[in-house]
Image 1 (cartoon, one colour):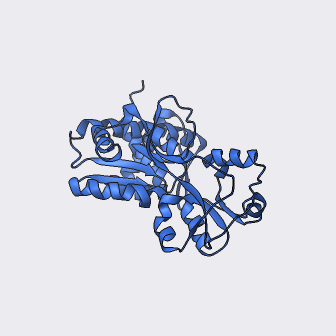
Image 2: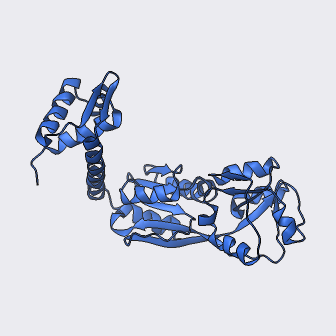
Image 3: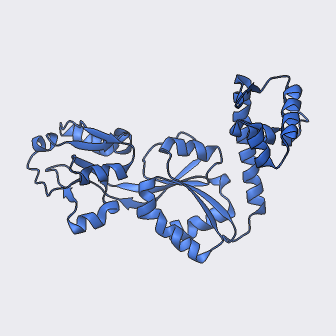
Length: 293
């Protein structure tokens, strides 16, 4: 193992993120000359240029990009270890980072966060909801988030990833009008509004349609269920969404459940996804008290 000062790597990491010596100096509370000396020293010790110096800042070299990946993972792992050591045995004053799809936040997670904050006002919760399922798994493995709440039934290849079922959910086709679909042929004529990863997220439905010789050909595709619901409200077609997320609209008659004769498809589940050895005391208490109750 080399004797390179860890602080040099921290400076390198912040400069790479900021792409500016002056911005990095502000973030690290150092002077710009100190930042420059640290980068020059690290490049000298590694005998490799890590940045291109440009008029408007700095840019990673190919060697710098490769090193950045390792440094980022290493620093995240160190931060995790520090967090686990310093963290108290209760949730108060702890910090939790959760990855959760946006459509599950409003329906499922927000009530849980509200309850937890009432019990522990000083608990800090970071919520990441703008990333896809695969991206969140990568963030979990890179120690950027503590656990994931999702409904994508994907087989995770990593052996250390644990998936637990939390709550069943029901997916339905919805329309702005009270449609009476009398046959499979009638259904195929409708404009379908689906998500981009429809075949991944709804494998069972795809198989059922194939067995019944129904062709799925979406006319509009979105990357978020909220957009599908909005498009249906604008009468652009029928969408496939989680029933629990639109209960109010169904009750008021703003939206309608579209039944397809002879077609039955299984429900989905909200899942808890985590890496056991990465969970802190606070993570485990939060999961036990609020997610598994």
